Image 1 (cartoon, rainbow, N blue to C red):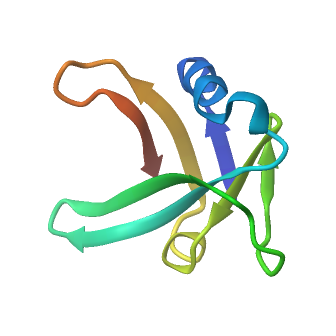
Image 2 (cartoon, rainbow, N blue to C red):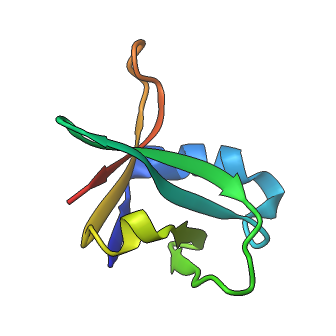
Length: 92
C-alpha cells in the first residue's frame, strides 16, 4: 500500500490533528460503491490495538477492510473548490 499526501493536504491535516498527531489516526473507510466508483469516509479517530497503523510523513492512517484489499495507491489531497471543499482521497 502506497499513501501519498499533497502539501495542501498536509497543511489541512495539521489543522485537523492539532496537538494529537501522535494519538490519533485518520480512519479511511469505503462508504458506498456505485457506477462512478467508490465513495470514501475519512474520520479522525482513536487507534485500536488490533489495527495496523500506517505512518506517512508523521500522520497515522488506518485502512478499513473495504479499502486495504482493493487499492494499491492512495493520494490524500485537499480541495478548496467552493462546491467540494475539504480533504479528499483518490484511490487506484
